[in-house]
Amino acid sequence: MMSIPRTNPAMTSLPSSQDTRPERIILHVDMDSFYASVEVQRRPELRGKPVVIGSDPKEGKGRGVACTCSYEARAFGIRSAMPVSQAYVLCPHAIFLPPDFDYYSRISGGIMELLRSTGFRFLQVSIDEAYLDLSPCGSFGAAVSLAGQIREDLQSRFGLTCSIGIAPGKTVAKIASDFHKPNGLTVVEPGDIRAFLAPLPVNKIPGVGKKAELHLLELGIRTVGDLAATDIQVLLGRFGRGAVSLHALALGNDTAELEEYDGIKSLSRETTFDSDTDDPARLMSSLNALAVAVHQALEDEHCRCRTVTVKIRYQGFVTRTKSRTLLHMTGNAEPIRACSQELLREMYDGRKVRLVGIRLSSCEKPDPCQMTLGI
Ligand SMILES: [Mg+2]
Image 1 (cartoon, helix red, strand yellow):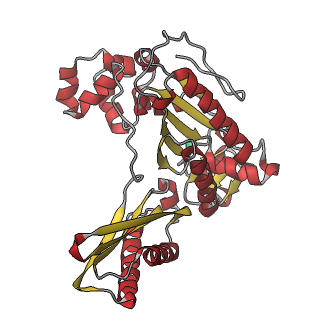
Image 2 (cartoon, helix red, strand yellow):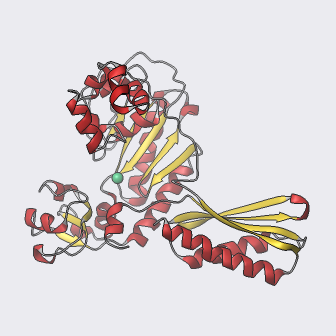
Image 3 (tube, helix red, strand yellow):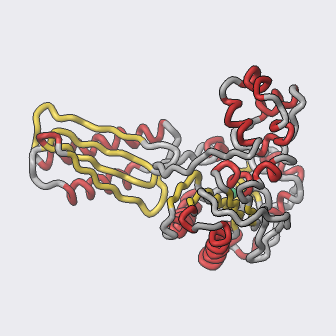
């Protein structure tokens, strides 16, 4: 295990294991206090100051929560999802800014494009977090160099820092990216996973929430090392089958693979015509109705999306699809409708159509605090 400083990240220096050729190398990147950093980047006068992104604290009487805060604000004890009234008490002179999600989405789009352009398998998991499968790099050393390049590119193009974890599996890569924030790079090589995880509190494992943490504590389990030392039968008795992968992880087996998928989820709606049609007006009006329906589904899920796909099934069940990725995440109906129309026009070849459909993918749910704010 080692941590490599590139642009002055916080670092740990732990003995590295022998240089093995790993089967899998997964990188997890997480932007540092993303919304706050983006605001500081566009308003340099905020640099070095405690900045809180959230609703107006109204001198301590405001409702709502802080979405993100700068590291300077964290020094006062302010945290994400904390009520702004409490944040105000902790630091009345902090600069409270309303969130500008459209802007953050645009910056996120650029960041994700940069990561995607590396050509490795890519998986975006939130507005400021993504995985890359760097297994084709062939060695952790090569992966670390690439991570350094990514950090430099993100810094020079967006003026933003990130924290990166590199490990043989997704779960450990995510835990590692959180290990040294901000601006950290933590590498956990195969064979070091167990030693890396052992001292960490169990709530560092993604998916172990407050409730599970309490149950574990009742069994005397505080750290991942305690978890590893616990008989699997005891865990099965308390948690059921879910305990299997948790215990395996504690023992150093991170089996979570990176599967490229369309984001958190995709949504689709389609219409089969009563009789096959080649009437362009009818096709277009059906498509518009589908755009309304699929946008409604997106709203119902409190999601935004980035990719629009139109499907046409012609007579004889020949099916064609065409996709386009929007410039940035959207929760609005108009870009979805316009993009669908464009795709249909480009794809439609005049034959009789049996079915049309629209699918929205690369969907993501904004942070819970965004919903609290009603945005
Ligand atoms: Mg982040």
